[in-house]
Image (cartoon, rainbow, N blue to C red; front, top):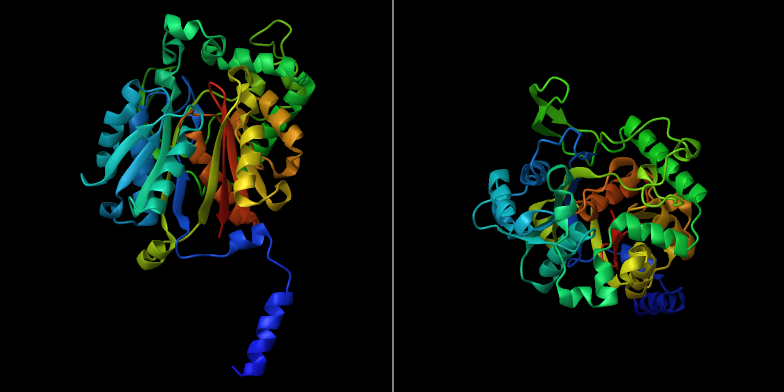
Length: 418
């Protein structure tokens, strides 16, 4: 290049407009933390769905086996697996280690459990991303699992000590989710009509997505044992579709359901997340590692945020967490192509979307937890698979996952699809 040409190039660079934060995020770098496989099992109805007889550790083993199969990764290269889960005794640490061995990972692959309530799956994925970024490991899997059929109920919350009971804010941490969500709906004046309309849209979007196969790529089918409740016959079945998605749901039909937590309340079974069983897993490594191993790159992890809110206002978590992750990345809501916000309750999701001023067309385009379930520890990892699959299908690039978190927190993360 001549001196004249070089001067012209420098001049052009100096006078060209600065790249936006979104444009900068789209630029690939060798040290990006990338996702080379992201999948989930189907979500099935807690207590009566097709996974009702499948233990959580078996669901996890299936999802982890799916990662090995779909990615063709040498399992001996995976140094650590972090699994988000909320309900299992002992945090699930023992059975999750065993599940990894059953899935095909060698004894050299470490495993741990983590519990940050409804964001446990996302926390697991972020923990693996951070471990890679720090140099602690080179390749890892962030996963999540929950069998609400076998482990959900009053025993999931321990009794508080006298010390905790004596503190008013601490005491609020054990208020049941439905009750505190009802309190939030009344406090923030969220109309039942708006909640039912949002819930109906979730069902309708999920039904369309399922009917045209938009979930097929992200779901790894599992073959399990199932006891038919009508005949008591034990069958071997393959489960590859969410079984909680209902047809013919409208705001009008939801409007006929009685409130669940207060006679004059607005929250009921039709506008709250379904109790479900399921698992999800995400394989992560640096871009340079993926290129060396010839792993397909689905997208990259950018940043995450965690924030606390008042326990009785648990549902506002995404409203607090999303702006915080925007501050970290320089993004704004217009830069985002898809928001996956967990539908714990229509009330909290409607309020967060409205307060953040989000375009509803960008929120949960394939429906959400109201339509196909919220297996507590799995959801955060499931959202990564759902988001990246839909971004790639539609040509979108930037996505955000977020959720409210029990006891009063919110978490969010930014992802870029490739």
